Length: 324
Image (tube, rainbow, N blue to C red):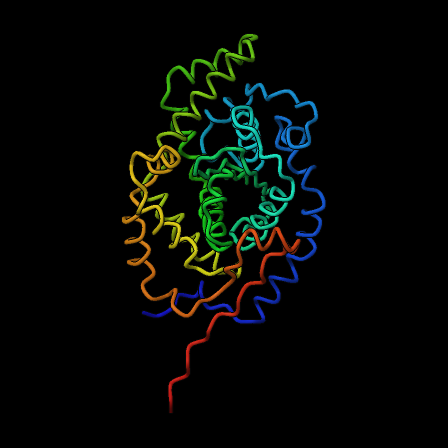
């Protein structure tokens, strides 16, 4: 099978990616607290033990969700994600390890620079939760649990997971699912109407929003969305310089998880079966992963050495010229 153009990356292009990313990454790493605080919900304060900021009311969020997709431009998409992230963080605290938060932000930001939408305000958060889960909110917000990180054998596995979630954001998978759920709910439309004509209590709005989001995130996305995130995530992680088999390794591990394992309940219930995802990757990519190497440093090695810099995109092997 011929390699598609997304995998043909010469050393010159790789060097260019590294040069373009160097300054933004340095600035991003130095201002992690500012970026985290911009989420709302007092994430930065929660990490450092300060007083949390007030939670978002959500009035304008419902109004945004009842608009057509054509009217939800990037600025509105980011606002939806910001308010959703604030609400989600109100239910689950961020992990207090700032070194880990900086590392995951740096890693995720680097991978996002290889995505179709590098200009989003990408923010990555480690949640203080022993379960195995990762999810994203519209506009560039990605969350992973500490339990998931602890179960990653190496950096390439975490990179594959982050790239999968980044694809959900760039393809607007959650935005479309949330909006469809909002438009389908008569109660939500009535609530939006009441907001525009009266002073409704903020707590009621917040409760309605949490119910709406819980429905989407517990039900999960469509199988086609998950398959797309796997395929694009593998390509994106490889483009960022990581071993493309990282996500494959994750799926191979998930294939062995027993259905009654409580740490994996949500992940297993909201995604297609691991074997189906592996079969799809094999059918859609064939032998395209062969010969593509990349970083397989462990997360502990990165954190222990103090070198959190992600690898430059690896040069891809060029096809051999035919004789004659």
